[in-house]
Length: 257
Length: 52
Image (cartoon, rainbow over all chains, first blue to last red; front, side, top):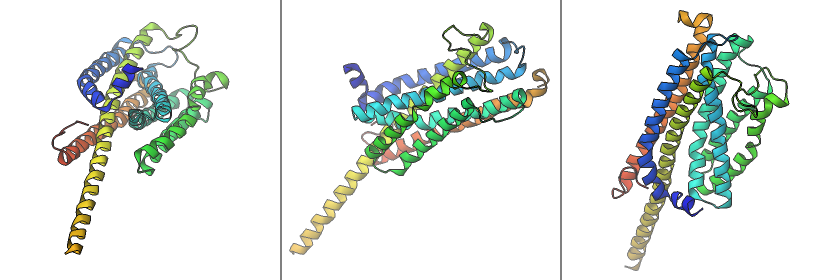
């Protein structure tokens, strides 16, 4: 806990993230190059879905990251509400646009995969609908951050909304088991192990690692930006306060004369 | 394209759309970071670029 507290210090976070960022972004880029090479030149076409299986290497990591970033936001919301830690709020705010973009990528690539395989871009089945709900929750959270000016008040309101919306994460994960869906059931994270052939599984996992590292790099940059934004706000308020006091003193001086 | 068969447009389209969304996110994140860095440097030159 002490170590987490030390890392959660904004000054220490800026120093550490500044050193780690180039490595994380570089490793992510290398991971994506290797992963896409495997996806396009090493992995075979699927015996049923043919070449459209190549969409999986973008679609599945995007879906995982959309849910992973919401989980990060949920943990940060607990940190913000229970310990009132400003860095938890910063992490939460910075994660929302990134998670929203991955949810959007998941929905678009899913539609483009669905059309040739299912004969339709969209169907209101449980998996697709719950993923759309996740995107809408992300958009609501981003809107709420922008609605309230005071960061601590906004953080509290967003934390509550985030915790309420977290109910949707297990619904997305288990929707294919709980309801009859057009979407296929899980084929990687299963109790009895992956059902996907290793020649497709490895490129998928490498792509997922590459996307994850790049997403973490973006999250760190966005967190650094948010810390700076809060510092700018504090400095602007202090400057306005000083200007007010100076104007007040000048007014008092001229009245005394 | 021909190696991808009749569904090439859907496969290529998926990668292009993902590239557009994630590319826009990256550019927006970096531009926002640069703008706030400059704003903070103007307000507090001692802290300068990228410091809290």
